[in-house]
Length: 266
Image 1: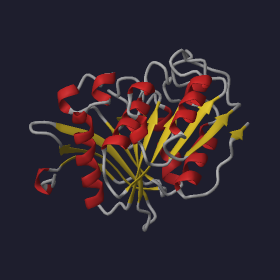
Image 2: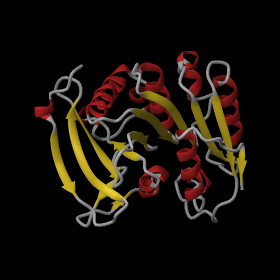
Image 3: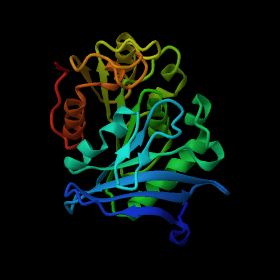
């Protein structure tokens, strides 16, 4: 589907004084008939970098980021909290909001749906029009359902990989997706001490083993970090790589750039 550029609405454009950034803006594009989707686009200052990460935060995806009048981005998700760290490493990032017909949030059924994939196909096409040559889908917690489902459904030569951080358990969630159809390379990162009831470490290993039957998977066990300051399924805990965010961001950046990543970090 060709996007009509005239319909693109730039809701907010703010040039940051911080030299790490070229641009931070919230945009809205048409996706399905009568439906729009907002997203936060952050780009690095240096030219020539054409890689972009599409972030799917966890929970229901609603209200996952805020942009203050001073240009400060904040959010509860590990991915949103770490946005500036990705930018400093030369990667553009896009954080998606739920579409206008699911403004209160995305449930499991929608994350796995053809409608969700249609919205992401429109976003992918838009990013291609902006000159991005490589697109990676990055999910955190419940957002990993969106990353895997769209990795299966989307067919774009510029889609280069799927990155799963603290993925949901296999038995109750990922097993219901047609994982045999995922042919993109996958990076999985999971904290050994993650005790969230829907994403225990053993379930991540199970998902890894199933996915390896169909595609290449790099799996990294994370250890260490800070003492939790939230419940186990919230993001200021091992589930959100609390206190070790910079190390995890570097692992993702290395993998995107084709550098070798370890199987375990402390």
